[in-house]
Image (cartoon, rainbow, N blue to C red):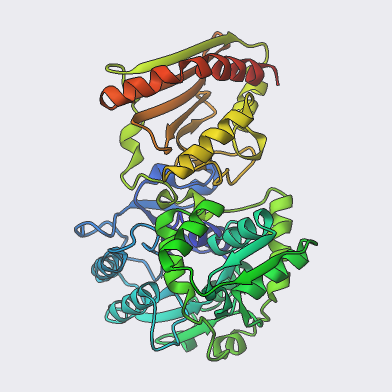
Length: 474
């Protein structure tokens, strides 16, 4: 079967893609930027890629006519606190226009459980998208999921951050709201199980695990699974805005996502039936089992995708491709060079930078810079990195974003997403003479930008000098 996969570079799409290929399907990946599709060359050779921004005007003929089924996995909740519902409606309408020119028989849409009368803006938007998709020239299958638990999922990582960093928590009242979490493995089973299954055409199904838990109980079960004790005290006076700041400062989430999550967490997300589970004969996993499976992936360095690599986990919503050309004029620069004996080993060292591995020199200074960035509304260092030794264009790397990661060219280029009075690039390159080049480039914004640069020059002397030496010698 020939399948269109939208949101192919997202958390769900990245996990669904290899499963579809394993089942022998032809897959066409619709992404905004083909360079950002974080797959290796072997998988890239097995798929077709089309560049489409579903928020922009429809360009007829971009999607192959012989598409038989499609997955709608486009989500805008993290992009904005006010306009994401309008953005999601626009993407759904444009999606329908694109598919009108194809032979698509079925579209599978992953939504959220929405059985309450008073829905959050997020869940209302998901329901509105369902209504728009239902008007398309195909049969729609809707899967409404509870909280998704898996390595790299936003819900799991937020709970992980809260429990690991705050053994004692004073929490808002919404932690008592009931929800029904589902393991990412089960989500994949449902997504692949309904494909081409005519019994699911035109149906809307809740999918969830067997446990109905409050967010407080989820955190307590997480602590139990990790063999430590946590204390949670609930107070009635924490406003939504204060709750959002609480999530933002303690966890790796962005403030926009925190605002939308807090709004949704006040609504119960509990499945009303298990029709699809019985139809497909899927035995779902408990919440404790989902946690265990997530940590097995983490410990084996097999995290396939992470919400943190989404562009909206950072501060910049525009196409970062325009930053790949490092400016040469009107800039301030720190350049370091060092002859290396083993360029292959040095290249491996460069590809491990950041995250748990650190920055090779003055890690405590990097942590202070990350804390200051968080205090001023930046992303801080908590995003870390998804893979310990793999990097792809578009990946998050602490408070940097990967613009280029080319091992053949022996070049890594990063762009700063921290709060700065200007724009910053950090580049590592090994030339044909086995000389390692480490270049920090800063394009200041006015006088304040120049004052900022010159104020930290003494730190650059130690940090960048020590960093290149340790990268070369590690």
